[in-house]
Image (cartoon, rainbow, N blue to C red; front, side, top):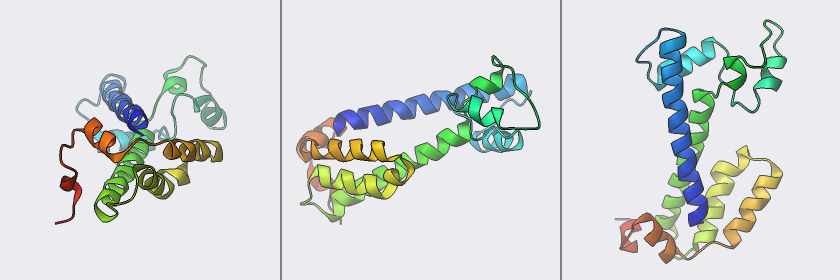
Length: 162
């Protein structure tokens, strides 16, 4: 689980870089300097960019009847802040569920808590094959003590409800 968490936190950094790049893009391309996340998302919705992730752009933009896009256009490469922000919120909900499990089910294994949090918060957004891979990963989860050490928790009582 700790290597999966490392990948997840790496993904958060990638999303933060997308936010920065898009802020710069809107400042330069649309002359809109200083847009916050809310402003970027609103502009993406206004321009119908909110679903784009770079990998799906050809399919999504190709289905649009109002405009055609050159293969090397910025639209074909655009990675939406809105889409990334939604996915980051899913991860935050997963983490909240996981840490609530630490407090409310202190005797449960890390694998059990991780699987329950995944099934509740991330699984509904993933295809079957990803859900099956996640289930296998949770069966191989490390101990809570190793997880605590990996995230810098020195006293597991920090998770006890007061």
